[in-house]
Length: 226
Ligand SMILES: NC(=O)c1ccc[n+]([C@@H]2O[C@H](COP(=O)([O-])OP(=O)(O)OC[C@H]3O[C@@H](n4cnc5c(N)ncnc54)[C@H](OP(=O)(O)O)[C@@H]3O)[C@@H](O)[C@H]2O)c1
Image (tube, rainbow, N blue to C red; front, side, top):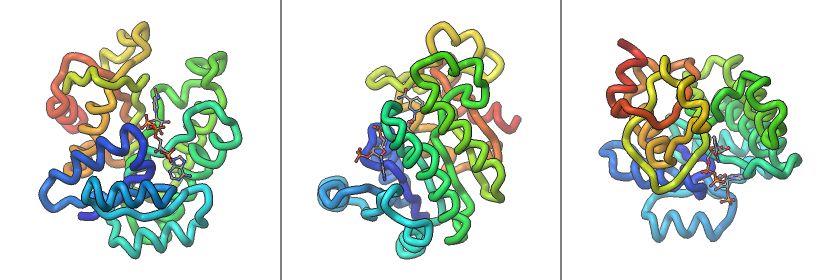
């Protein structure tokens, strides 16, 4: 199965590509926004790539790129970095909506979005520096929920690098993580993404908050359908 990774050149996107490349019968296709990045994925990483900026491309162009690469699932992990309000609009909000529209146009039903924890709870983020970013994430999530796609909205806490544990906090204990800002290592997030690309059970049309905790990722995923 060919899986488009939108934002493949990012920290999470690269991990998803690396992990998915090793899974039999799954081929990540890196969706990137420069020739240099495309060359890197094709020549250094050894996977296919599509030069498709979600800001510069139309919905029809993104849909065509999905068709050209026989894409059957999409992972959306692109982001503008949380500061520049214009690009928060064009990447995190409208970029995501355009990719969703392109999925519908190209007949790709499986869509996994990397959102952010508690995006739907204004009181959590309204008086923080991340307000604009969260407004975009909340709105993009809402847009996704209004489609017929087989979506999964993953809502990780603060992303960290180099602290992977392979373990997640259970949903009922999530509140106890509030003081540690619901941190999760990018590697653990990428692991979840790759696992649910392969086994979607319990994740379809759901919003799933993620933070590191005490339960193995496989056992955490089982709690979603047991
Ligand atoms: N940081 C956190 O604590 C946190 C918490 C929760 C959720 N998240 C979300 O997690 C996701 C992944 O995070 P990350 O750390 O991997 O972010 P990242 O390293 O900044 O990666 C984001 C990627 O999006 C790409 N991108 C930007 N504009 C694009 C465009 N027009 N077309 C195609 N790709 C574009 C960037 O491309 P370039 O490489 O060319 O710049 C970059 O590779 C993001 O959606 C972020 O909002 C982050």
